[in-house]
Length: 241
Image (cartoon, rainbow, N blue to C red; front, side, top):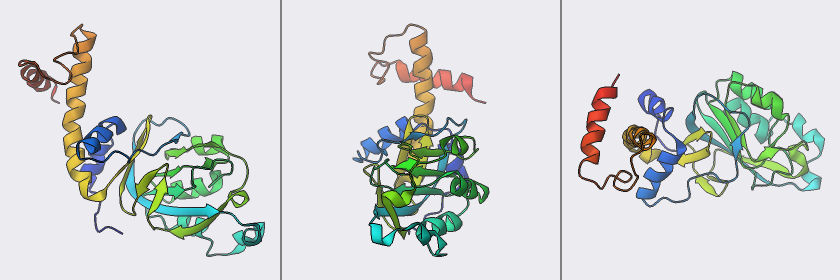
């Protein structure tokens, strides 16, 4: 696991940053595959999901290993992950993009939320969709799925590198989710990308206002006309809190 600790300042900044802006900042650094493909919010939330990654890896279930009685084992990795994910972190699961079975349901997700989890992500399914959606804690997955995880998935590893929706996730990476989906920030880049994207968000709001006022996008976005950045600085000065 990384030694990086997400600061309150960076967390608060990322709460206001879109995953689209983060993806652009990552692209500038040559990182093209940090967006978690195929997941969506279980229910819209007013704020971003932000937290470091605590991972759970599933492999394909084998019938002789996964009778319903395995849940009696106090060391079952799915249950242990729910009980050991640190407060303020995001539990993120590798379900091999197979949403034919759930990787968690509302009881476990509720327990994670009450323990202070910042969110939960799976590239497979969740059961009890309405119950999960009613929680304040953000949740993202590939879709609703009623069958228990044991049908197709065996929880096997906790807090190891995983793939989630084709994105590499290392324990301690920073996970950000919004209405567009989920993106994974490598821990060593989190602070600088948060700072860069805060400026990007300001500029894009300026651009939106200009477009609404009838300004053509050529020369505005990107700002290749000489006066665009000057007008942006004037705009930002007028709109500072």
